[in-house]
Image (cartoon, rainbow, N blue to C red; front, side, top):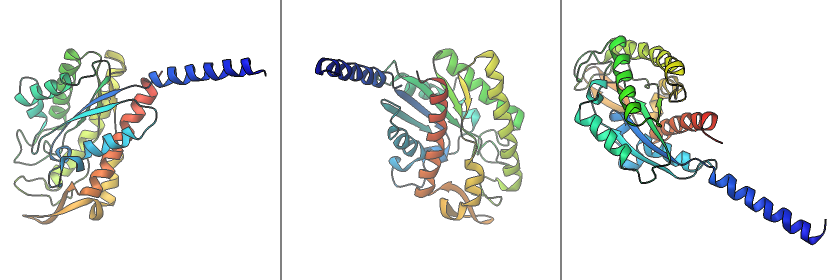
Length: 258
């Protein structure tokens, strides 16, 4: 190959690489959740699972910019996020505040822990049927107001069956929490027909992982039924954030990369 041919190949390669880089999707992510999402008992907001999920995603070469808003609120149930509430309004304001309006907007939802309680949080106990109807109501309004958005439903994580602080969870609550998971998967499947490529199941692995490793990844807390485990510590928040980040990455790669 002569030098002119080589130069042409190099130019073509550069154009191709630049074009490929331009095709990297930019992401705007709003995290919806409770105290686990908020990152209570952690030193800084940067230690919370949403921040660690974003740190993971920013390390991936297949994405452009990745921005986020943490809309986690301690003690909140699905009822607190229903359309018409101030909380829901703030979620939508956060979504509208991103400067890159062409980025893929993602709502990462992780709710259910407080819904599952026996008593204490707003509306608890929330039956599996009411829980999933609330989730659907939230999704439908988000997609009505942001038609190009994507919703990713992350499964809730395990808590110890003696959990009781200001609220009462115990084994009854944990069993109810576990009943939510198949409902989330069925709800996701229903959108395949009615609104394809907008609602996806996210992480399903963290529940069992935290159950197995709760002594090292969850904070031991003093409760009315002894030491209980509910909230991730700093190491646990990194692990949970990576579970969420990998789930988001998987959804985007399979459905939105060109």
